[in-house]
Image (cartoon, rainbow, N blue to C red; front, side):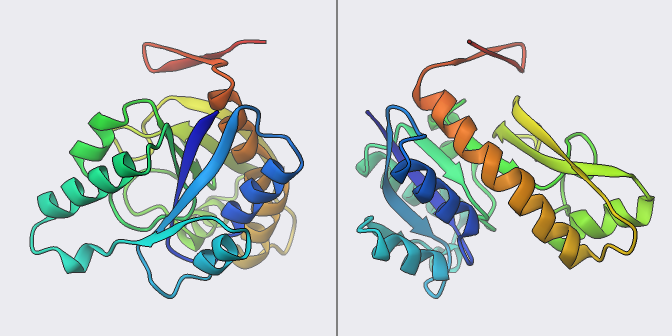
Length: 208
């Protein structure tokens, strides 16, 4: 059984999707054993506490140097025996120590079909604003591994979502979460925990 640490900063809707999937038995061979927040007031912490999941808070501003923060977060994850780290709306940049220590063991959910509308500066509503401004007819979400390149790690699963006439960024954000993010993130986590993902040359293969 793999230990899953979920990193959060806000409301925790993707965390809730993971909790619900685990309760339904959809995450094979994995268990959320820790939720770590960059924000002490994040509602995601309440979601974790309501489900008897251990919580921690680690804030970037409490460390004078980024390297010190990077080291502290790495050691915190190691102390919780994390086998997988999931970024579920985590709004703090990860350092090279965390990324190298947990190489191909960090999964992020991004609200677009990478490589569209991704990379530095593309997060939250900004992604959906950009998609609508471009006039694309289809968007979606991507579950991917994290590496040193922002949104550049190996793609695990993608799911498309239709853009409709009259969509606002807020309406589109909600549809992408409901139809894609909450669906593919638990699936990606389950595939990892079940050892069904192979990575070759920054490309994943899913074992049937």
